[in-house]
Length: 121
Image (cartoon, rainbow, N blue to C red):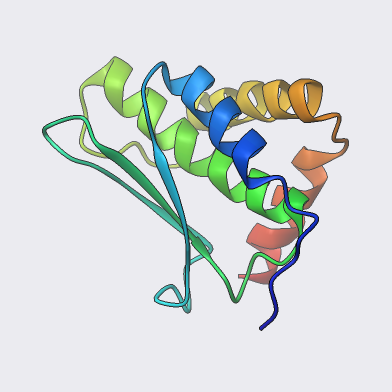
């Protein structure tokens, strides 16, 4: 596993925090072997998003994984649920988040990237 210096971690964090409206920590992790990503929001509001170092190699894959977790977080906040499963509403929220990242980071085809990642998992 090697570090990709082309990944704009600070920009990903900044856009993530703009979407959430609060601070968030993004962790590249070797603890996630089967999962692409995982999120945890503490009762204090502290938000942690873990990204699999095994599954996410490119900036686009990392942004797609972060966007997926952000959709869970946003819907959980709106619906006051601990976790929101992959519903039509979830995928709509995820698409909107992907559009924000595409615009702010000048990326393209993130919906395609996330679909490919989910199909490989």
